[in-house]
Image (cartoon, rainbow over the protein chains, first blue to last red):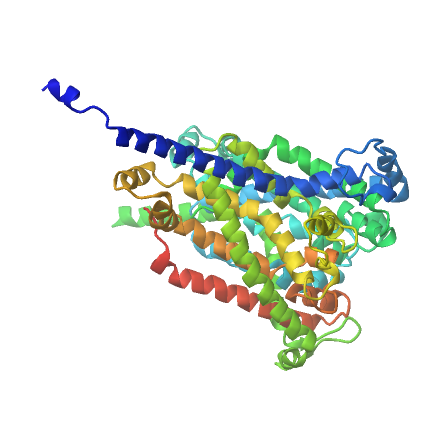
Length: 295
Length: 304
């Protein structure tokens, strides 16, 4: 039997087949990386152009070939925009809205989702179906009746209108419920036997376990409110109440030729989202994967 | 008998207690949901049969809004623009997203970084993004056209300033913005495909392309199903980038459904007419979702 090993030396043709396969493999890998690197560059380039334009003089914004790193960066652009528009006020308004709406949404959604996931009551499925069904209705359909309701409540041109509309998302309830469903019921049963009230179970058992879901929902809401354009566009008229997105839009229409200033303002509006994104990237990805799960 | 009776009484008491607890948990969300989402959904339906501007009282006019709509050239153009936008954007986005996801899923090093880079445009504010692209697209001195000129194209498209190229310009930017988002969805779908299937196929001598067609695509169908619906729905709702980059122009070249709804409602204050248009948008979205759900068994392959 042992002789068999000697009888079967690797034929030269097999050898060349192996190197050929290796070559194919390397070529394939190179091709893959080429695609990914190319598309990554495509994704980043507009942002780099934005950053670089924000540090140039109006004269040099459109220089070609593009001067990616300006020789004499005009840092003063970043000072001038705070004086030209009320960027500080817009920042403050946006931070206020984002903070209030995100907090409210975390509270209302995590509470409601607990009822849908962990308490059995007769109307549960029917009510949840109502939530799911309205998730399907696009915002553009309800925005007109919502506006009329706000008009009757005398809340147009107030931040309250935006807060009231965005503090109760059916999507948030759906997302939190998905997460609670994966927490075993034995945990809450044990807590119940230990004499914890239902609210105690929610507060002391569920919420600590649901931190990743809360983080995902919180970050989604933060980014949504920070970037929201149509909502404020409909409700906010007075300059003192404008959000940063509306402020920049206003700035564009007033100073349409001051490209580098517009770019500097845009970079300022992106910064908080960039910081949140870099520090909490994991939760974005998890949140998306979670919302894509079958219910 | 008495024991059974008291038991059911006890059961009822538990149900009642559960119900009260559940409603306590639900209430803060439900009040807001009911007033600001549920009622508006019903009201949108009713409004579409009314004539209402902010000055005069509302008047029931039956189907007149819909009749008016089909004679209104702005609506018809916007409708076709939306269809054209959707049926270009959706396939492009899905092909790009899927290709990137499959590429990244091939044991590429630094996947987190690449994923983050592709995902970022989705997170960045649409206002900032639209403004940058507006500058990039600038017909006379924008970097895109300058680049095309150095490539030997002497007469590059005038992008957002031209009737033919404004829509493609918006589409390219939209694909760029959302491909990474759907890529993340595809990536999580790809992760759930068992490696054994690929190993078995390798033993059978299948090449990469065959593996993609006979394993990846079928196994990915639940994700594909979800992504197609999401992408279609989002495309029908396109508004922000159009409002900021082109304001529906030049002419009516990029006027889309939501742009019409917005301007009829909040510029012309024709609440009833705008609601009728919104109802059409809802119908389209409802039909897409319904068809997809109806036929999903035929092509969706659930592993469990």
